[in-house]
Image (tube, rainbow, N blue to C red; front, side, top):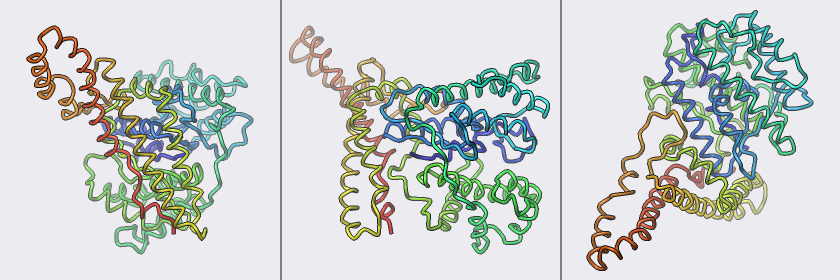
Length: 472
C-alpha cells in the first residue's frame, strides 16, 4: 500500500475567497493543477500494480480525492486500487467510520475543514443531524435543507459533488468489505513537532525563537496538530513568504507522520506546493533540508518505483486507462510486478545474506519493470490504433496541457509512412497497394505508437537508484 501526500486535504483545499484562512490555494488554477496531478499520480501508480492508501483526512476532507473518487472506486482490478486506514474510530463498518469522522468534523466548530466550507455553525449542526438520521447513511442527503438557499450556487454544487464522491467511496468500501480496503491505522506517537525542532540549528531551517513562539501560540498540548500550528504561524510570522516556507516543513512532516500511520512509511512525500510564483530551486532546497532529518524509521526511500506524473498526465485518456486494466496479459504482468516490489519489505539488513538477496531482488525487479513497460506500451499502442485514434492522449479530463507534438508527429501522415506507401504503390500497383496499406498501416502505426509509449513510460516510471534503495 502506498500513501500519496498530494491527496492531503490542505493541498487541494477550496480557495481563500471562501474563508479568511491564509494557508489555502490562492487561485483556481493552482487548485486545479493539484487535483489533476493527483489524478495522474493515482493512475500511474495503479497501472504499475499499486494500492493507494488513504488517511482519515484524505478520505473525508480532500477535494482532490472526493472529486476523483467516483472514477477510481469504479475500477476493475485484481487488486485493491484504493484502501483507507481509519484512525481514532472504533467502527463496526466502514460506513460507521465515515459517518463518525464527519459528525466529529461538523460538531467541532474549532476544527478547520479544507473542503466542507461556506457553512456557519448552525448549518454544520444540521449536516451532523442529517448524517445521524439513519443507521446506514446516505451521504448524498447530508446537505438536505442546508445549502438549498446558499447564495453561492457554484460552491453549493461543489459541496454536493463532494458528497456524491463520498457516497461512491462508502459503497466501494461496503461492496468490497471482504477485500483489504479498510484497515486500522497505526499509532506512531509524536512525530511532527520533534521533526520541526530538529530544524532549529539548520541555517535553512526554522529559527529557534520562531519555534518557541509557535509552541506558546499553539499551546504545548497541540503542537502535533497541524491546524494549531497553522494558527500559530499566522500569529507569529507576518511575512507571507517566510510563513509559507515554514508551512512547507509543517506539511511535509505532517504527511510523513500520516504515511507512517497509514502505510508504515511507504509513501510519496514532496515539498512542492504547485505555486507558480515559487522557485523550483527554493522547493528543492527545502526538500533537501527536510530530508536531512529523517529518523530511524526511514521515512523516505521505501517506495520502490519512482513516478514523475507531470510528463504522464498528458498522455493517456481515461478510457484507454480503464481498458488496459481489463486486459488479462496486463493483469498478469502488473500482479507479477506488484509481487516483486512488495518483496522489498522482506529484505532485512541484519540478514547475513542480505547483500546477495538484495542484488538478486534488484535485478529481478528491474527485469519485471521493463517487461511491464513493454507489455503496457504494446497493449496501449494496439488499443489506440484499433480505435483509429492518434496518440493525442492525456491523463484524465480537466487538464490544460496540449498533447505532445512529438508523439503526435509519429502517428498518422508522417513522412516515413508517406515514403513507404509511395514505394508500395510503385511496386505493386494501386489496387494491391490499397490492400497492403490496410494491412501494413496498422502495423506501422502500432510500432511507432508502441515505441513512443515505451520511451515515455520508461522516462516517467523508474526503479529507484540501487544505492538509494539499499538498506543500511
